[in-house]
Length: 226
Image 1 (cartoon, helix red, strand yellow):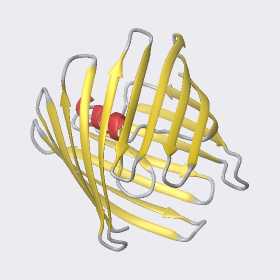
Image 2: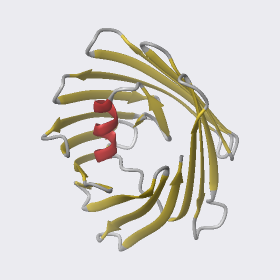
Image 3: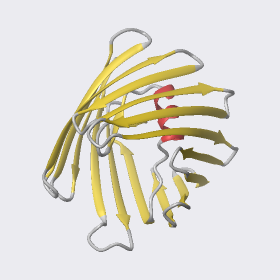
């Protein structure tokens, strides 16, 4: 299952390994507190995902439902979340190597909406992507597959509204029973996510994000079922 963050939340896009690997490294889904994920394939085309997150901050716990439909050369998703969050995404393969997609969302709390666009170009060993969103974010990333177990990635993001610029280096390392993903960015923030397979369909998650400059340290534990 593939993912990319176009605007303010994660969306699932086309079923190709490279887009997935790129964002698994650069945007490992780190979290704070306790998390529980449940995913179920309804058939070959439809799938349902549910996520519940518990944090130490009041009113910050949330739940999200994702409904996916996979076509022969496209993928669509509809999202529902608490806080009156509604979102939809679509990506289409234009050629064998090029895909284009878009996203729209509305968050009722706070009142915020956004529209995003993305493009991806891939080969067997690399993938390059570009993203732009109405929230002001413009991003580019690149991943190189070193081997079947190791991928390295880099990312550049610029927000033309706030003038913020962030560059990142990420990695993805697959072990026999686990997977380790992480990155460090130009602000000095380091993060890592460990996913350990306990049994078929059951994974344990361990998350950490360290910001020494702000003295902000976040840790999380979770389970993924399905």
